[in-house]
Length: 406
Image 1 (cartoon, one colour):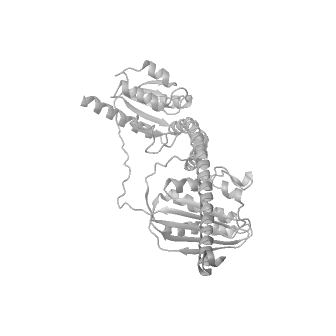
Image 2 (image 1 turned 90 degrees about the vertical axis):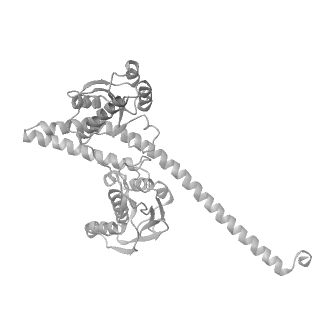
Image 3 (image 1 turned 60 degrees about the vertical axis):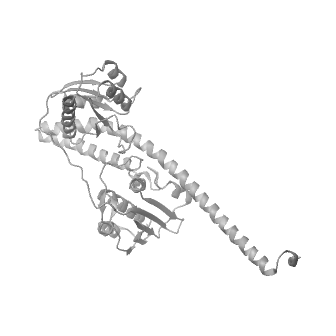
């Protein structure tokens, strides 16, 4: 019957072809499942990032009401004992602000720091020197193996790369309670750089791998975990820079983190220039913010030098708004009833000469759709306080330019 269908060799070839096709389908199915897992994980992390951004905004509003008055007191108090108390409050609030910055890195919001070429190999070697003391203090012996190739600079920031490297290194150290080996690899990869960090430690199960980049997720005890933002911050930074990060692990078989970062391409570096304006005329200013502590701070900062009106509701501001009444408006973004960007749009339609400053605890991307109605954007908390004074001076100058061009 075989002879009636095909020769034996032809049949063997057909069977081999079909077996190869089955293998291809199995690979395609596995790739499809992996892609679906990555999609679901991406959506999960995006949702968590949005939640983190909202929490960051609320915390920044609170910190504005602490850091602003504390800075004002530091400049006015002569009593050394009282000043020490104020310094304690100020320093604690600054640490809180740094924690919020780390929390911001877990969200989809983009850092405002300009991206520059960062020499990744030099920083890897520097970080390894910094963690030597921790390795020496470790109960077990930990060996570090280096596989570092010459690679181009990556497009990022030194502070961000420092966070990436230290969090990954300390995570590896924590995974080796009885000692072991950490291998650090650095290799050119297409238009970027691949950083690989492997350890021979305790490893992770599938559930831990799935959640390892979530904010506040930690396998440590509550006392050890501190903030739980380490690897989630790493994921946020890498993603913001256009890179990727993956983890491969199994219980008892160690873990491997693979990070890919784009290489620096633009030969020109454009740094933001600060604008300091020493004097500014008295202006008519409207401030709209639903946080009482922020309104009180703005009243103190701007009320003596400008004709300031402060409101807590965007709808009330629009009811009384008329063209030519104000030179500058400072508007919060998240307010009940009517968002700040909608308030700004309606104000702009009534008075095109008005200069509108966005004041918010959110860290916004440059292409955020809520930004166009505003002329300036300043993030809370206002540290140092001359930041908002300088923005006010620039805003008044811009208003006068617009009026003069009419």
